[in-house]
Amino acid sequence: MMTEPVTRFAPSPTGYLHLGHAYAALFAARAAGGAPARFLLRIEDIDTGRCRPAFEAAILEDLAWLGLTWERPVLRQSERGPAYRAALARLEALGILYPCFCTRKEIAREIARAGAAPQESGGRDGPPYPGTCRNLSAQEREARRTAAGGAALRIDAAKAAELVGALSFTDEDAGEVRVDPLLLGDAVLARKDIGTSYHLAVVVDDADQEVSLVTRGRDLLPSTHLHRVLQALLGLPVPRYHHHPLIADEAGARLAKRNDARAIRTLREEGKSSAEVRALAGFPD
Image (cartoon, rainbow, N blue to C red; front, top):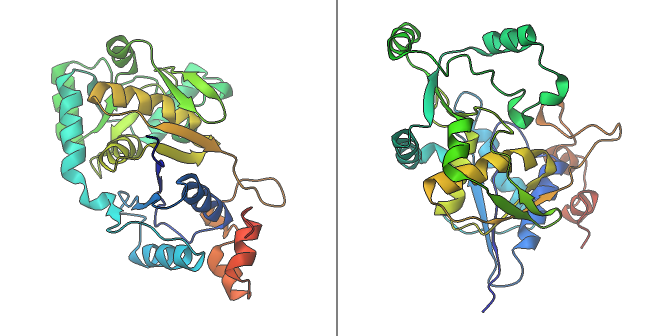
């Protein structure tokens, strides 16, 4: 018997929601189908330096104002440290993680020195990491770890590719997509300051919450290649995906929190009704 998919909306409380978020949330809720639909809300608050309780409260308020309902309790990534550490331990046991001590400036200088082309972008993470720390000796790693007070953990993409072999995932628009395990290079799976990363946390959380259809913007399609690799390495179920279009402003630029980006809160203050905001987001009643 066919069952309705389990979907989720997973915002970060680093600012107020804008029309792009409204579109993503409404898209996910609609994709969950009819009753008894399973639409989940997950608060991705691992970046404790940027996340704020006031923004989380505003997220809940704005989504309810838009007419959305979701299962309780709400999962918060800040409470999920043990699950992420367990996943990292499994990956470390496979020998595919290595410590990285590079700063963003050092990485940028190394990429510039190597003459990396603009088209070699690694999606949301920027250009692929040049592998500076990949081949450090055990002594060098220990010395740098002591000096730096810790390290990020990166996946050795080439080793991971050898372990998983040929992979694919299904996107509702693109169909079957063959995975390129090297697309994002040696991505960070655990930041030094927070002990995990978006890539690791989202894969573990989607599996634990039994999400069967991941809906998100097309800008995250490159990330799905890495996520499929992690699912294979960790023995996790593989959801279907639907990478939807992004909402843009009048100039054609992607909406962003940092420039107010037509915040739902602002539209409410201007007197817009929830029906009007849903229509602006592309979901008229």
